[in-house]
Image (cartoon, rainbow, N blue to C red; front, top):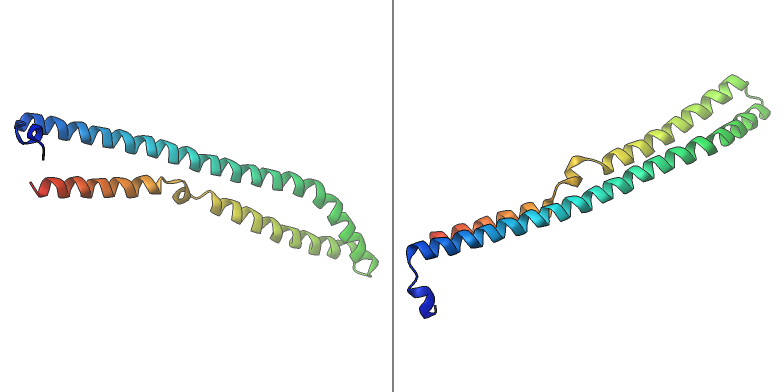
Length: 133
């Protein structure tokens, strides 16, 4: 320790500690903001993917479904049964896409995990530093 820190009063030490803690909290809040912003950007991309998939699905599935129903009808299947088979198949694909999109948007993936880890580490360091004194 330097001469300066050995002769500081209790008030000066407390002031320094509060200043350090304040700076630490400010840094963690900034990190949390940055991390949440990054996570929200990822969520926006996931929503865009879901919307894009829905638009493409609507356009292409009309044509493909009609073609598949026509093909099944040509093979000798009644038109109603052919349409039902195609509809169930497409519903299964849509369910898989929606499930994937919803799983990508879970709140746990949006939480600022790095910030939480840093705050716990910082709290432990501060506690250790003041327990030693």
